[in-house]
Length: 180
Image 1 (tube, rainbow, N blue to C red):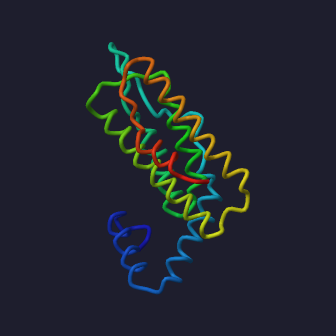
Image 2: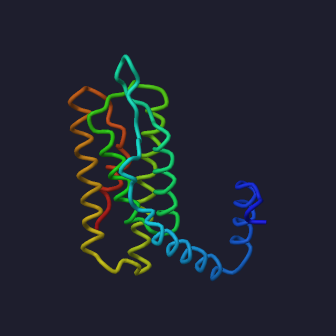
């Protein structure tokens, strides 16, 4: 069944299973997911991953197919309660926007808005990770937050230099209001 079911049907079955059974089942499921994500090193970007492309002749950027894969990995991480691991991945995605320009509307702006929303979700997941006592290395957690902050600050400076509109305002606000 798992090998042959359409992904959307399998997701529906999993949601129903987790929602209609004991909370212990959902906890066990997310713990198994965290172990699997750690095994497959889901918290690092592939060095060859192309996240954004420049469109000739304008040189303006647009999302590349690799962006969706990277965002899916980040969402899997923070969804499984590995918020701090997802922060590093998101910082890498943000750094990939440095040196790029984009139109004020279109696919690139839409993708950047999704990244901004993912940043806020990853921060929330990180807060919950701390509250649950699943952060064995606070120094590494602080380093992940610092890496995200540096990426956001670099992006703000970069976008300001070419006169664009900074796309990660919600992420910056979430980070600024986090007392960590």
